[in-house]
Image (cartoon, rainbow, N blue to C red):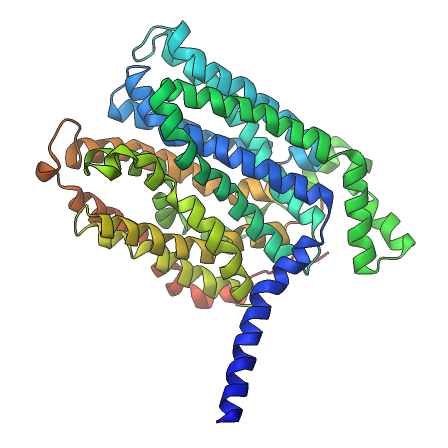
Length: 469
């Protein structure tokens, strides 16, 4: 009996250590990484605070119908992803700090213009308010196309192999913490100052985000962080000097192009399959802002309808809580296996919503889907960053996110039609058929885990875990 108690204590002690140790290791990292994480929290709040209300903004303020409003949200989200493909290399060329400052400045101009558009323009499709709003969206697209690849490249630069997994998980979790905050902040501001008031609030916090990067991620902080990492790794002075050398700085433009072509990830068929098979399950991410806001405000009444932002933004706070814990427990597990299990857990609860719009079903869907997301999404981002050759982390992150472009474009094209057919405006919930909508979405999402499972033998024969110099 005593031996069983001892074994039990040992088991739970090991579990506790596995959960807590990565947090302890990460707590001893640099000021520069702290600044990056803080910037990501604020940017998560401003991004989700705008995108969660964007379809309604275009609907009510710019005068577009559900289909065109959904397409505008798709232009923003898909535009960001395609921008990463072309602008992801910015951090590789000009460095982390400059990239973040340029990115946030572009987003500041874009958010201000988007917010002003209905006040200085005429409503209607292709009228002046619509055109001004799209110019604002362009600024956000360009800024975010630089920002996200730069942030993940920053984690690679500012962490050690010991802290990398938790570094990526925390960055993903902290952005989602920022994404949850609008669920608390937005309703009272919206009720007092309307949606444009919420947008102005988020624009002001973009300015604060610029200040965080400028005053916390200083050049000295970056140097101290790199020195700390080298000291922990036991790097000699000669090795440090060699590591600091930027091979690309010595290359001509022609040589740089050849280097990029030689190391371009799209030449790897397994890499291509791995990122594109995730598209079906990633449609559920897109539905978080394309479908869930209008679904919760139309198919429900009472508390859920009046506070729909809370439910729209519940996924981010759950990600903040669950991702570091799940990562701590699974960081040593096989990446590919975690991708199969995680995408399956994320896709299956969609069928719960197919049984009807109830509070229990909505909560079950959001919680179980989020657990699945926490299992695979940070691992995927870490995998892409780790297999990237030196000086190409930004472009690899941009290309790794490229399927998002197709996901957001395709999902935005049909989401408005599904809402108008199955969850139409000005219709009593009893006459809606949201069940069929979610049943179809569930069948789409399970294609990802099924595809990953069927291709497991072929994929694992040449599955990379780190870049080989």
